[in-house]
Image (cartoon, rainbow, N blue to C red; front, side, top):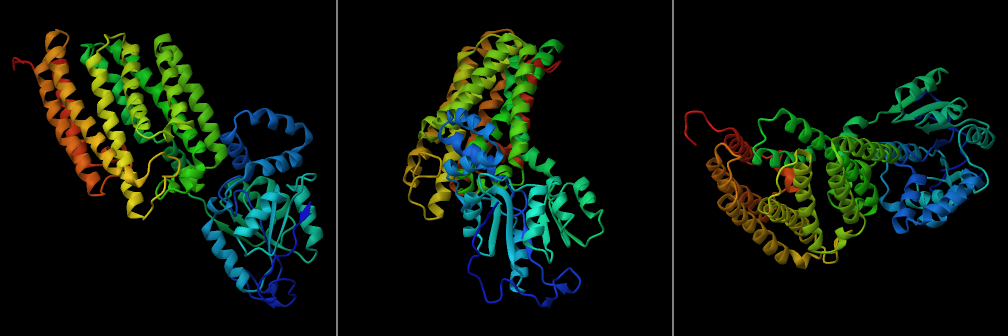
Length: 507
């Protein structure tokens, strides 16, 4: 166990023996307020943060970490702390709890950080939050957790203490505390902590299921609707078997894509926390615990690839290609200007490839090229919005986690609009050279509505981007934007009429 030296603080901040009224509690002696770190003061786990930070710099360090584990948790934490180099200033804190601690500090209470994290980590936290008078932590030999922490605190504060924690491992500590402070604690743990009848206070948590759903970006599943396009344009819209095959591919792609979003966010945590809008993402903000994010990532990848295997080897191969490109993008290629937008366009096009593989339809070079240009344009729109945001905030250097600089905005604008216009031309060429020459569609003339929809949609996206009214993700914006949804309905109707025709209209 490590006891850090008391930090300088205001007069009378430590060691007072007089009685004082503490808001929310009965009159009594002014005992120290002891605060846990992981999941309590911080909405994250420092050990997991450290492990991810080490792997982010060098994946091969996994083997070194496996060698550290047999020497005990305290030793493992010390080694992780030595190698992690975390930015403590950006780690998400529980602001409501911090306000409570600040109030107690003004009353002259001693504020103590008690954590199972390593001493090196604890020092960084105490430097960030000068409210703390000292820290009690693991020291490379003793893992200060559960019963060990409870005994250490009881010995350190024989007159008693109040304790703020969040997990079942804190129950032995609450059993020795004068007051139980529950911070975003599971209901079953909260009931057990209150069972002793001690006074308690609670800081409620936001629903984690909602945070998980947002982290999985379920609204992005709208993109995966592209897997149905080859079926519709291939004249298979009347086949129940084709719908089942495409539906299974859609589900497997959605699971893998959602898992890859979480993996990307885990890998990008430092950059997201420094970003003006991405810092509010579930993992970056701490509303979704890292452990939950990791579990959902592994589960989503396993289940998605399993369903793809059921859909057939072609679907599995295409989905593995999608996953490989996604990982390459997340880990490295997203930092290469211009190439990053092309890769995002390619990922959308791979969705069409998965759809072709699912239903065994014919390959259409026109359709794949159209998709590449359309979604590359939308990717440039996303970068353009980020660059304009950086300019408005007076930034001149390279964007965090990206290869762009604010001065690149005119080039990105030009390439984005050019790619969007090219996609419209390519779709018209597709209609003239392929759609109207094959008998697989019942009413191919209905597809002429689609270029008009494209013109209006792309015009709206780039117009709003220039006005700074576009969400930083055009697809996420489109699924909430009423005019865009209306255009999508017109496009969907044109595809439906092209596939099934309108009886009696002669189309």
